[in-house]
Length: 186
Image (cartoon, rainbow, N blue to C red; front, side, top):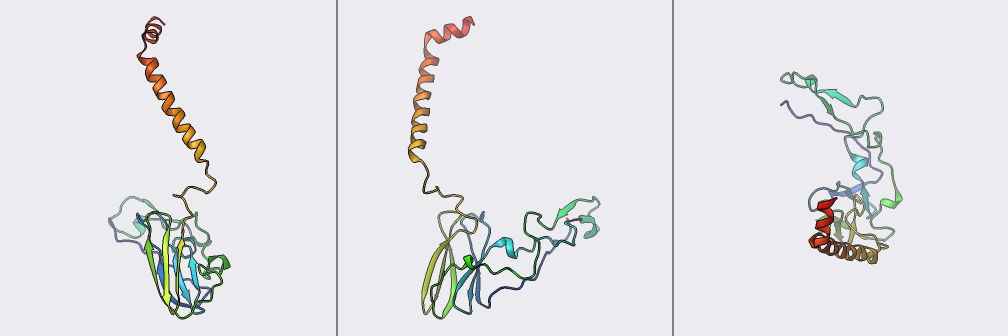
């Protein structure tokens, strides 16, 4: 086993920054988002896909051989340093107006960010304080563990009740003498 490979990239942020924090989740399944307090006292979110060091550069190869970094490695195992699913690397992180968590609220003299886990894996709480207090729920990877508002609960309960009734009917059929005779004779 060779030395670890470090992958790093440099990025230019679209805003001037006072404080930075990363989101956290209960079981660490959701990707992290970067939460910023800007110098204009806005709360801004940058998704992990935009600041990941694993974003591929168009001019670089995506895989390298492990033996190039370690004398101990004799096999040419391919190590994926860059993720092809991420967008191509650009030094400037794009400014997206819909990533402001504080919307268009006028907040004064924000000092610090606290990020808290919730019982749902997809959700984190962001609390920002200073002269004003601001708290919001955010979902870095969308709401993958929540039921949609238009979910049809009646159909779900009808299906469960149908399965229970079908189960009892099959048990009764299995225990009947006629079914045993049909099974043995055919």
